[in-house]
Amino acid sequence: MGNSRRQVVQSLLVGGVGVAAGQTSSLARQTKPADVTVGGVEVFKKEFDSISFVYEGVNSLAVRIPAPREVNERMLELDKKIFLTAFTLTCMHQGCETNALNSDHVLVCPCHDSIYDADGTVIQGPTKKSLQALKLELRDGKLHAVGRVST
Image (cartoon, rainbow, N blue to C red; front, side, top):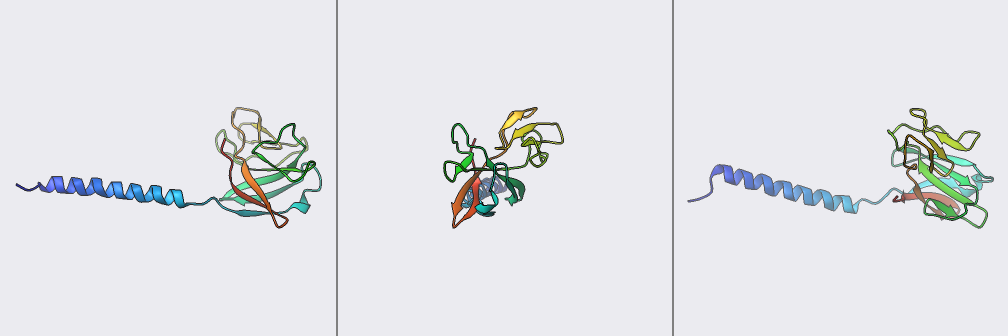
């Protein structure tokens, strides 16, 4: 005898879910990170100069930071004297937006007082995670945010 109506419906549902899941993961693989023009590098005349911008709908900040002891994936070295970094302003504790750099060159989350250094690394919790770093590229004298840095 043939399949019951219930068996046919179940196999259609399971097959449809599998096809939809395959299409979704295929679409996710095709999505490229945003390429956002942040601005010209001439803005970064001195340490702690910064530019606010929006990356993938999230308020973000690019900052000229002092020369680090060691260059890492959170920064872009323009020459031996100029280092830039960019990150989103969303606190990694509970998602509040941090305040802008203050006169002490730190960012403070107004919700629970997490403190971040000018390069977006966490100084004091409650959060244990640094702000989401953004990958920077320099093209034709313009700074571009081109993706998130994996941490």
